Length: 203
Image (cartoon, rainbow, N blue to C red; front, side, top):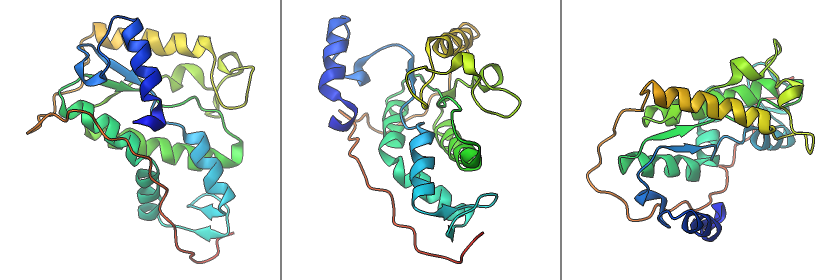
């Protein structure tokens, strides 16, 4: 899985006295992989695409949008699937809600699809939006990184870990998903997003 930094990850695991293969770890796994909704929304708008409630040059259906999200994040979905099939306890964190107002609908639709797909695999969702966003659904300033317009800061991370540990203490573990065979190492090869055919104008 070179595209997610396998050598660097293995080095950090080794430095921590852990196995160099995540599948060999015997502990809950907390991940944000695949939930970079901001980059998806930016590319979606750049391509002139639109879904219900947004403006763009080419309108696509809900089914087409869902297929586009799943194809663009197929490597991430395979990442979660491999861990669940190996019987691991896995939790995912939706990204911080930092977006321009005109991208809110696409951003939230992306999050909803990713959350549903990994939840169906038995991945627990550490959702801190109620504590970190305002009435407009956008990340509160005190949780935003000062270094860019995308990431959150340590305060946001603190809320995530607090919620995560509370879930663990309440034994809110995702259910086990049996598998016929445990994969030796998951293949997280990058895939290009599916090409979306032009459709009727939507303004």
